[in-house]
Image (cartoon, rainbow, N blue to C red; front, side, top):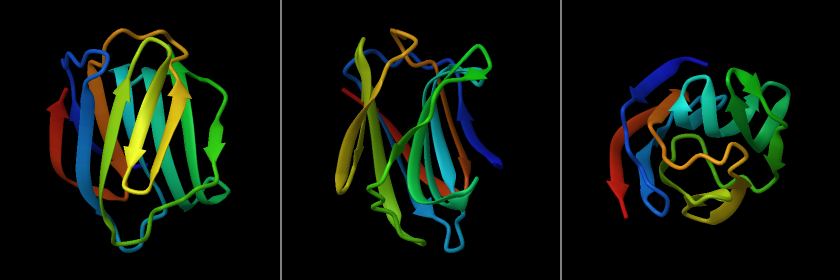
Length: 135
């Protein structure tokens, strides 16, 4: 996937929310929002797939520990459409990350026990319009 926006040296604490606003490209195959310590250590890899890696209209979530991917979680609910403007809100605590979308909310375990988010990356077929950090 093509690397897009990368933000480092963040200090997002438990309970705080990372909001990513933007637009899904009209011919999107998939995109990802990654949060964690750095590109090789991710608390959450949030990856909606329209049609890529053998998945169609599926959200895939995973973690990455020192460059090694964990086990993928698949979510069948798929509230995205090509060309949609969306807002994704990611927050976390010591046990799980929560992803809030306009029509869907779900949890993913904080497998690495991360205590803060220092890294945010958006990649793939998604145009970032704004990023906001809030409590």
